[in-house]
Amino acid sequence: MIERLKAPISIFSFYDHKRKLFTPLVVIWEGRKYKVSKIGYHHTYRSGRVLHHVFSVATKNLYFRLVCNTENFFWEVEEISDGAVN
Image (cartoon, rainbow, N blue to C red):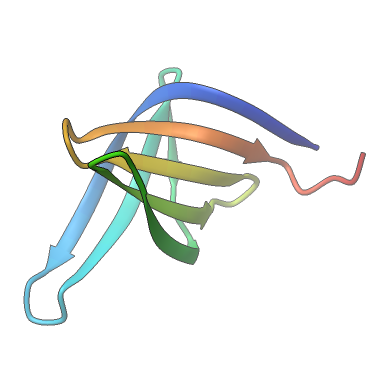
């Protein structure tokens, strides 16, 4: 089931300066840690002058849509899914 929300999260990540590649490694949401096992896609969009980075990531049991606001570097989870069909 897909749930749409806007909730603040914390991210552990890695940035490879040689490949210019940012990789989210762990999502911390509501006091629980979720290790990222796969990154599905990454894209950007603008809202006015603010650039947002969107990542689709999978953990062992859940899928997350993560958004980073580059003006303040706040991260939010916008969507979460357990993969079940409604």
